[in-house]
Image (cartoon, rainbow, N blue to C red):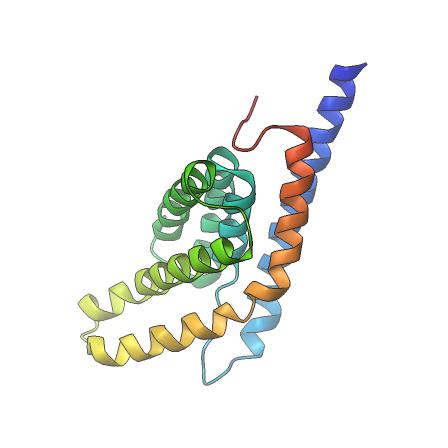
Length: 178
């Protein structure tokens, strides 16, 4: 009986995580693309993946990074696998830090989100510097604005990823997959 309840809880947790990513993907790719601020589109999938990594640990953070990366690659027509590799690595790294040295709270989530967004925006603009010859100074200003614009979405995403992390914490110890 316990095994059946355990499997059901894990199944529900997976469904809730998938639902979160699909809602955020739809928000980013279908709605926010039309609500641009100074021509900038916010990146919110990396914020969600970072939140999952902070509140659930390395293993689940890496898996969340894979899915968020695939969705970002599709959404932004990035070169194949750039965001997938980047967000998987950052999910693993942030999750490991959350399992070992970071406290799981809003400040850790905010700082990790700033760093991951800055790296994601830089990766998004990397081909523009080397293949089109756009000056790096101009792209740095755009990257800074896009990171700041994306950081506005940390506040509404935080309660959702925190609640999912608490729900998953009742099922498995943080950072463990069985």
